[in-house]
Structures are given as C-alpha cells and as structure tokens.
Image 1 (spheres, helix red, strand yellow):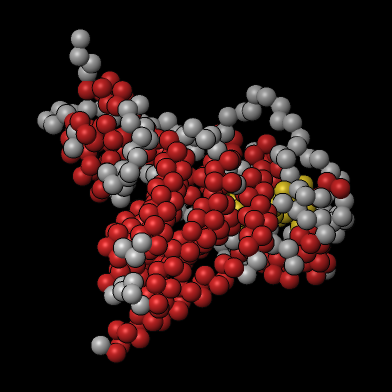
Image 2 (cartoon, rainbow over the protein chains, first blue to last red; image 1 turned 30 degrees about the vertical axis):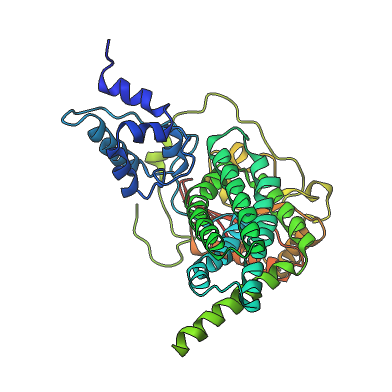
Length: 272
Length: 156
C-alpha cells in the first residue's frame, strides 16, 4: 500500500540527504536557494531532518523550504509538510561565541592563502629556487597552520564535545583526512619536481577547503554554539587558549608569510 | 500602557492584564541560590563559590521580571547583583569584577540587564573590568524585557 504524500515526506526526513537528491534531483535547486550546500558536499550522509536543524532556518524559511521540496517530489499535489523537531527555537543571527570566533578568524587567514593559489599556480616554475621555496612554504602553511594549529583544535578539543557518530562530525573528519591526503600528494609531487601534479593538488585543496570552511562558518559552528552550554563555551575558550600557547609565535609567522605572498602578487600585478 | 515622558527606567507601566492572565504554576520552584551575600558591595570575589565558576552579574530588577530566573539562568552559577542607576561607589564593582577574572579565574561571565537604558551601565562596568583584566573569559550579555521576555542574548 503506497503511503500518502505527507507520510512519505515524513519518511524522507529520516533519509540521507544525498539519497533524497539522487531520487529527486529538483530538491537540489530548492536547497541551493537557501544556500544549503548539500549538493556539493563530499560526503552527504546527513539525514534530511538534520540538515534543516543544523542550518537553523527560521520557521518561515523552514516552511517555505519544505513546501518547495514537497512540490518537487509530488508535483501537482498539495502536501502537508512535516515540521522538523528541534531542541532549540530558531535563533536570530548572533555573533559566534568567543572560541568559535577564534576558529572563524583562523579561517580568514586560511581563505587568504586559498585566494592566492590560482596566482601561485599560474606562474609556478619548479626549476626556480624561489618558486620551489614558495611551494614548500605554502604546503607547510597548509600542514602546520591549517591542519596542526587549526584542525587539531577542532579534532582534539571541539569535536569531543559532541557525539562522534553524528554525521556532521564525521563529514568534517572526512574532509580533514582528504586534506591530509592532498598534502601528502603535493609533497610527493614537489619532491619529484612534477609541476602539473603539484598544481592539480593545490587546486583540489583550494576547492576542498573553500567548501569545508563555508560549511563550518555558515552551519556547523552556529549549530555547535546553539548546542553548547555557557559553561562548555568557557571551558572550550580556556582549552583553545592553552593549545594556542603551545604554538608560541608560530601562528604569527604564518600570517606574515601570507601577507608577503599577497604583497608579491600585488606588486607583480602593478608592474604588468 | 500609559504614555510617559522622562527616564524610561522609572516610567510607570501597568501589566496587570497580561500578568494575571498567566497560568498559575503548579509545582513549587526550588531556589537555585548557592551563596550569600549576593549584593556586589557585600561579596568577596575570592569566596570559594566564585573560584572557576560561571558567574551571573545581574541587575537588581531582572529576577523580578523573569519568572524562570532561578531554573533558567541562576542554576549552576555564582551571582552578584547591582543597580547601575542607583548604587553608589560603583568603582568598587569594576575592581571586584576584575578580581573575578584574574584572581578567582572564573569560567564565564553572564551579564543580565533590563531593557531600560539606565541598565546598560552594568554591562559597561563589566566590559571596563574585562578590558583591564589580564585574563580573558567569554562574556555574554542578556537583555530582559519588562515583562520577562528575552530580547537579546549575545556574546560580547
């Protein structure tokens, strides 16, 4: 016996979002309208109901999103759309908590490096000592700043405050592992003097991290802030400060590196 | 609501209709107060209940406006209360808040104020203390409406 559309919609809430998009490709357009990036997500195992809760849509937006999706799945039918059960009321956009703000600040520096990658790749000449050094330092920035300094805080501290089996957490771990694999690939390419492979690796890393940072800034960190108590925020803040102290002045030196490369490419642009 | 002019903090408002329309509470609400004293002139920042604690610095009127003050906001926290409009000697408050941060090494500071403009002075005191303290902690500001609604809740 086929269930009615409302019951089918309810069942779909417990389906993983990539499967929903695969069965009903029109759903992707509706999600994109609300800047929900499930379509481009490399993992996509979050349940449909969790996607709505994580993005913390206002009640009106949730209704409009679910109605739009129902029209794609059941064209021509009027469907009563289910409301997603949430622990918290949809929040007005607020500032990040201080520990999340710290991670967002670190994202800003990483994004500055990502923005430089096309220019770095365009002129890269591995027979030049200066260019090889630039490539080495760029990969070191990724490995030491983006991964050891930033991602390590997330994995060793932040993510431990949540159920490790949550799909959204597993998606983040998976992205971090893909990044590490790309670093190994790039180091091998640099060691072998293989410019083409190195450029492929850098561009792939840029694409991966751009999407990853967008997911964290726009959805994950805000969801985490809504699900952490004031006391937990305080503990996180202290743990992050303690972790940062282990790195001493090294993070500042990476900021200096990115600024130098930015200046180099501004000067080169002005000289053209 | 009667129109008034002058200081919004002391302007008369009449909520009898909405207040008496609220459902009567069936269960007794237990006190979540874990210390004495609570008034900022009387507290010692080095008292043991402040050490490493999540602290609530609240304007005097907040607990009267907010029906669920004890279970929803006070539970699990140490407290200090003050009136930024009427209290004298508020320089001492800045020193005590600074001592919370640096000496008692509190975990967080939540400042609760009423929506009236005169109450914002309490948040300003907390921020002044935080700026001069060596040790930084997350500080949250919660603004409470005259009828107990939470108007905003922000990390500052």
